Image (tube, rainbow, N blue to C red):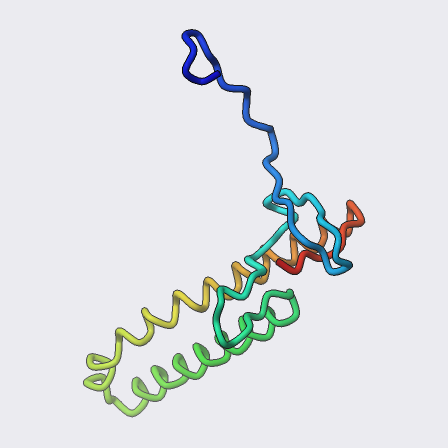
Length: 126
């Protein structure tokens, strides 16, 4: 018992696992790396994209938006309108976070898919 003198807790497992429901309805044990990105809906109205295809689409969309923003900087430099850049520079900093988060989520889920495929595990749904 934890209250007894000299008690030592059991060692933690080397690879902690998550017990989640798979696509086929059974409960499967996944390691953190096999699970990938968060799968639940967070009780929101809009269901999240958490498959690698959807995450790739979002990452490409954000990258295209950032490319358009960089094109705007080039146009400001060519037309010598640097005063505009002084007013909107913070938008570039704001777009960097979703840009990196989108690509990181895609690569994390893609790696998880490969690990699940190697162990022949179904995709978790929750």
